[in-house]
Length: 118
Length: 106
Image 1: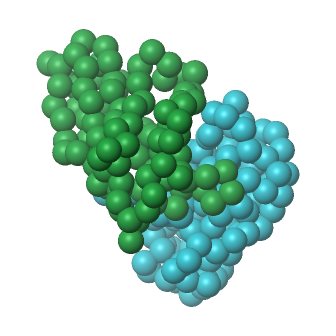
Image 2 (image 1 turned 135 degrees about the vertical axis):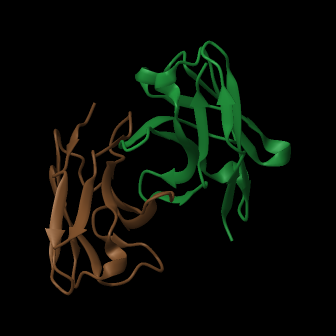
């Protein structure tokens, strides 16, 4: 079965960077884009961007350009998102999700809580 | 960006029918999807491309609409349906989500 397993919670300081991972299993990793989605406490969902694991091509929400960098490691079927220059406004749960324009996001990771605090 | 507008909250009695609406600021054709999110959990896809029921989702859930106006219907509502519901468009980048509708029991 399709699974997306994310890395554990992170506690980081303002101004630092963090890299979280999303390991895919149960399907051909290079066949579907992986998106990353942010959810601040009690807030709605925001799409950060997506990566095509086959080509490495990326697309970002303008709001997150310069903040998030998406990469993949095909050998381990893992997608990564690095968040830089962290501020308290980056405190959120970050989800990876597999989807397509037609099917929506049918599969989600369990989420990674990133807390930015001094 | 395509803005998706949802009512913040709805109260419904168990066993009744409820419709949750989502209005897009521009046409998204039928590239609209619906998710259920319970407290502390990741979102779960219910309906894709406006009216297609995701595998494993109870037939109590249905979706309709095209262009700018969409609805998610739950009939009948069960206690397990208490959650936040989000619409999401995939017609154009950036992908956007509605602000969510919180379903409450009367």
